[in-house]
Each structure stands twice: as C-alpha cells, then as structure tokens.
Length: 426
Image 1 (tube, rainbow, N blue to C red):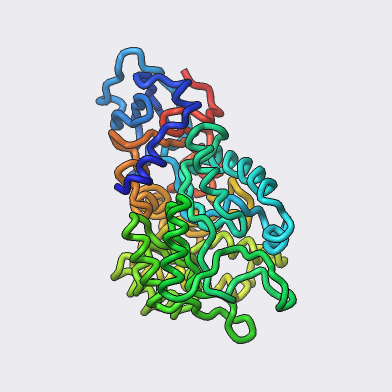
Image 2 (image 1 turned 90 degrees about the vertical axis):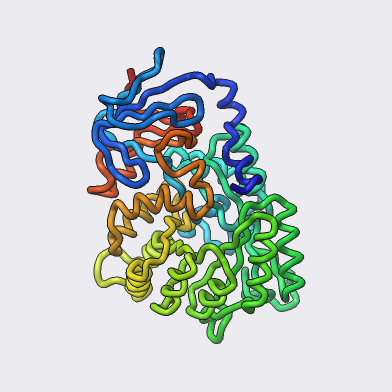
C-alpha cells in the first residue's frame, strides 16, 4: 500500500470523527448482500467505528451488545461504488462547451460547481472517485481532496491527477490566431527530460496519479494520432513509479494504445480503436481498460441521437471494440468520464457495460473489487469483509438482475458514517 494514498484515503473526515464514536456498532440488515464477488441472501453486516467488523448469515453473526440495528427492506447492500474516470471540474457539454469552460469560467466558479458535483456523486452511491484531469483548473482537485478528507464539505474519497500531460501543440483549446497565448486544458511536456521534469513537478503538487495523452486529434484533417514517443511515455511511468504513483493514458488509436501499454501504464482510457492484437497485449500485461461508454453515448445524444437504432457509427464501433476487450480478457475498469454528462449519473456506465455484452455480476465486481484492485486499494476498499473501511451503499432492488437498481440509492455510509438514509431504521 502506497503511504501517500493510505494517508489520504483511510483518514476519517474530521467533521465525521467529531460526531462518531470509535466503539459505536451498527448492524445492517438488507434483503441481499453483494460482498464484492458474490450475492448473498439473509446476511447481516456489522460495522464498528469506521470498519466492517463482521459479515455473514444473519443466523450465525453475533450482534455485539448495544448494537444499533438498521433494517433495509427490499434492498441490496454493496461496497461503495468506485468511479474510475471522472472530471469533477467539468459539467455537461450540452450546458457549456468544453472550450468555454476552460476559457470563460473562473477557477473559483468551477470549484464551487465541483463541490456540488462531489456531494451529488457521494449521495448517488459512489464513495470513491478517481479524477483524471482538471482541464485548465490547475491543482484545484488536490484542494478538493483535502476538503473532502477533512470534512469541510461532503464528498467521496478522491484520487487526483491535476492537469493532464500533453505533447506540445497537440491539445486545445485550438483554432485561435497563432500569435495568441491561449490557456490550455492541460500541461505540455516534450522529450524524456521534459516529461521527467513535469511528472516530478506534478508529484510535488500532491497528485495521486499521472495522466498523459498518448494520442489526440492532431493528425491530418484532425484525425487521432499518437503524441508521445514510447521513450517519453516510459520515462513518465518510471518517474511516477519511483514516487509510488501509477500512470493513466488517454489512448484511442492502436499505436497510441500499444506505445502506452508497452511503456507500462496502468490504465488505458477510452480505447475506442483497440484491435485484437492490442487487447491481447493489454490482457497479457494486466493493463486495465476504462472504456468510458457513457461519455460517448452522451455526446451522440447531444448531437441528436435518440438512443435507438440506427446507431451512429461511433457507438457501433465502440460496442465492437468493448466486446473485443471483454473477449480478450482485458481487466475492466468502471470509468464513465462523468463531467461530460451530469455528475451523480455514473451508474449509466454500468448499465451500458451490460448492454454492450458484459455480465451484470462482472460489472458489479468491476465497480467494487476490480476498481479497488486497479487503484491498489483492495486492502482497504471495494469489498464487504472484516477489516475493510465501511464504505457501504444500499439500493432498492437487485442490480444483478437489473442495473437500474443502482439509480435507486437508499443508503450511503462513508467510513462508518451515514451520509444518506432514505428508509426508516430501527
């Protein structure tokens, strides 16, 4: 476990600590319990302080004296869901285009919106979130992480990446006069020395992850093409690893993906143009894919698609590439790119993963134990078992039968502290 992340993610918010008793015991009794791997009926889960103390059949789990019983009829209890790819400092593109958000919205305004977005995210059952790029808002995510951790404002456990790293000339906003110095949505770096310097500087600013753009739409006619050389990507990975960080790569072209995987990145974001050969390489290397299905779906709807057939070519190609990744056995992250669409709706990604061919239980595993493993936090989060942090949610219905149950959140607990309870307890 990496010391920086351990300190950041296991600390109970100060406001919560003031309100809670380390010896307080709660017994949760839903209809079903998904423990991160398997669905169980008639289980009780016991929480003491900020940790899960016990979980098992209600007939055999002993209730400590003085425990408070909370009955959650008609619900499934799950580990808190983990959003693997988000942008708290963005809001839906049909409200304000990306370029206008970067160029016309002040950082203070964007932070204010992000505070609300984080609260909505937490109440929707996502108790941990990896934010992959502030898109022109500097290291505002690092400040938000502290505010959530200390209980200044409510929010999920947050992992940060600060500004994404891009090759010079490859990223936007673009289309302005050549002599104009336009603020970018990311930080530029070039060459092994330049990438090394920027990665180290970002680590010094406190980021948890390094994000790079391995390709972007700067090819002929605006087509996607690789940006960094493999040697540059490898430098980013090596420097990050020496400080206990992993690297995430935006990549949608076969060559951009191949370079990033060969360089040792931990996650590929999007992967739209992945080929069987690239997915086989990812599976062999254990490189995770965050497919961001919901973002592509949202963008096509903004363009007028009604969600029915005929599907736009982009959606058809995405469906095919996602299925190829599943068949290849690529480790799958649940990461939606929320911010492109409304915060609090990250469960759209899970519904689409099922619609595109993944089994419901596998999707639930990916959003809990899987994402915790991807983030290297599976010794703290992502499952219902004794000793782990009590990040727990209850939803009305059984999500293994219908993913729409994940939109009916009735109970949320973060580190043993109840932050949402819609149903009466005893």
